[in-house]
Length: 96
Image (cartoon, rainbow, N blue to C red; front, side, top):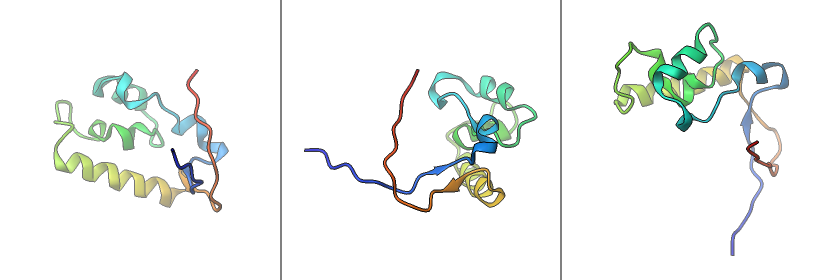
């Protein structure tokens, strides 16, 4: 039997949703993510496709790419672009 528990999610405040929003990481390649993130420092691609912050051709599996994802995730939280919910909640996920 599955155990379903509430948790404190990390998500963008309403005023940043349109800037942070992205397609799922596995439906586009690095170049497409780089193009979609141009001029948008708040793009979630900076966390889920962090190789876009490196020169073209960077191996997305290099350790420094994973380190960049963590650095960007922490920066998004410092800047208030992603905020952890105060209370534990249940979340509904849907794809349209």
